[in-house]
Length: 508
Image (cartoon, rainbow, N blue to C red; front, side):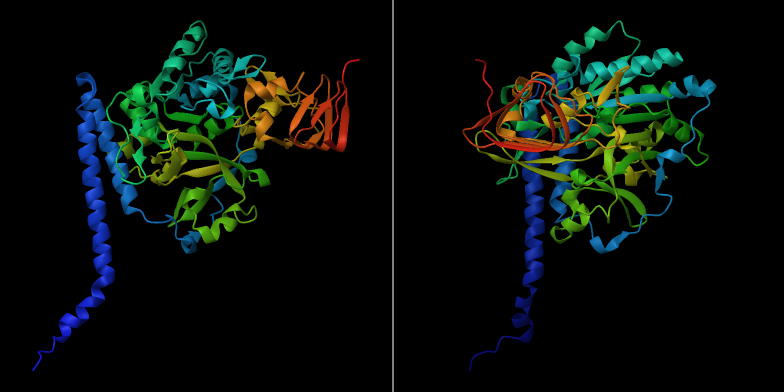
């Protein structure tokens, strides 16, 4: 007679789901061990005098990788998002201006940080993005130095300027910074980390050794969330605290609206309950639907980026009604609080997974973090709803058109919207990728930048050029069909016009 298998063994097959979970756990553990083994091999190729520093960096990278392996899917449970408390976001207009007699003392407690790790490659430029000329042959860096110098001279203060470079921008920036030696600005630089890109298939580094310059595509700067640890590692955090400085103001160097604001600084230094972290937000428009926003989650304020949103809630995230504000990446933070969260290891930022394909076709993963995601790690964090004028980024040539135009006047390195502009908002400008995306080509298509004081919306597509003294008003759409060319003649005034087809005016 055949033996009947006992019931327990038959039912054992129902353990498949947990077997599967166990399998994934083992796979993750193996992936982390394999990565750490590869990082050890890489470290053996490093220069002996840099081994200790690089070992610390690689330990941070493997910690990041370990967290990445543990996270599955979007990191936000949408049902747990709470209504923003009324005091979570303060209105800028309600902030009190400082007492003039106290401004110098206030400024002595401030450090200005600019994120300077980006290259100008997306706009067809070589080298750091900060050295692209944006106005009167002055670069982002020139304008920043002018702003800080003006502040220091006006109030007889000594606000230092700190640039966080990446391995892509460090060497070029160091050469350029020398020309500012005669200015009334102390400039410091430090480098953010250099992490290895990992293969999307094997989850192992694509670099073969630590000679970054010989295979620059194998490495990447891990987003601006790396600021905190790199700033501490540079020794500057400790130095500024010992000098009695209390707050830093951090922003992207390509945001020309991010100037030192005395009303915000005054609030930070006079509040009875200090805000350790302040994020400047501004009202969302249709152009900003992908920008990160502030939410209340598990009784804490935190930054929500589109990458963390479950797919079925992306439309909710983009809704101007649901989320009124977006993050400008202008951040104010208390120096001692930064030191505290680093020392007690409570700094925890969501990982941004950036998938890329290298020029050789290799698919890689970059693990990054965002500086604003640290908001939840600090006490009494708030947002401040600032005017749109504090968010003036230059990411594309369409942004460059705005900042080079008569829409703005320049004053002591700051761009101020012209009083002749009747609306507080900037025009919406869309320039065709094929003919306008690179700075050199963009500049070659304008004899000079048109008058856009009364412009609401501009769309240009195809082979289009602009003569001298052109004025654009209302909504203007110019579309040259494939193979056609449109030359807008000198002195032309286009108001609420659609121009299409082929228009060329040639010299006789």
